[in-house]
Amino acid sequence: MDRSELLRRGKKRVGLFGGTFDPIHLGHLRCAQEVGEAFSLSQVIFILAATPPHKLDRPIISTEHRWEMVRLAIADNPFFTLSDVEIRREGRSYSIETISYYHHNLGEGERLFFIVGADAFCEIETWRDYPQLFTLCDFIVISRPNFDPLRTRVIKSEGFQKDERDQFLHPSGHSLYLHQVTPIGISSTEIRRAIREGKSIKYLVPKEVEEYIKKQGLYQG
Ligand code: ATP
Ligand code: MG
Image 1: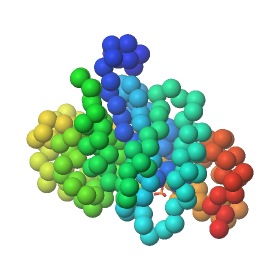
Image 2: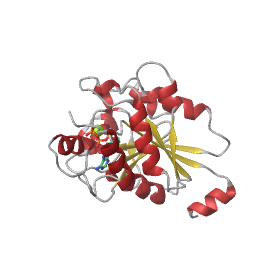
Image 3: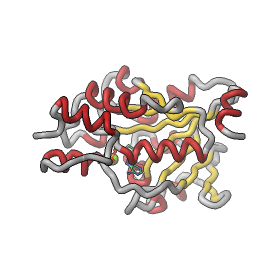
Image 4: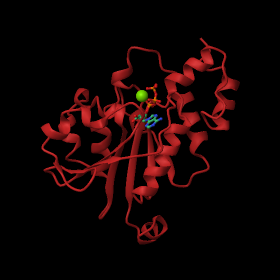
């Protein structure tokens, strides 16, 4: 069944893609596109982390700027939307609260997929209530150059059983998929560094984002 067919039937398969997006780049966008197609998702919701608990050690630019850049970056894609759930919530942004929110608001026959990069997945044991995450939705762990998602113990320690190739079944009935995307070695860290060093970020971010960063003078300091 292709995506338009799924949409017509009203069966929603929703992807949640969280990030700091400081700034959003082509790696994020291309991964979301590929996952959306591979898993026949009816939409991918970009969830902007307002106060990421694991990034308190460095300054993050304002939520408003990051929001605007994601908005500009996804404007031409009808399958992509932007959520402010973590912004409306006070305090730190915990995935367990976000996933629970969407889980409770799921309609009949709808299915949730949490999309996470291999690097972030490797740190999942530091996330609040992480074992519970696997009971609420399916997980799609996307490949990222230089990170091996099987490095963590969680797949074993949380009782996942290998199902098909690159698919693991959780005791709750949800699945965890290891999904290969086109390797794109772009990171927001590298983009911020390039700007600080006066280098170009052309072809690393969408044109609209590049222009916004320039106009607002972001990441200079
Ligand atoms: P930073 O360098 O500041 O950590 P980042 O490029 O990792 O930024 P995040 O906002 O931290 O971007 O990432 C959001 C999500 O996207 C995470 O799950 C991350 O693993 C994933 N991701 C980011 N860039 C890529 C990429 N190039 N390939 C695959 N996954 C990516
Ligand atoms: Mg990151």
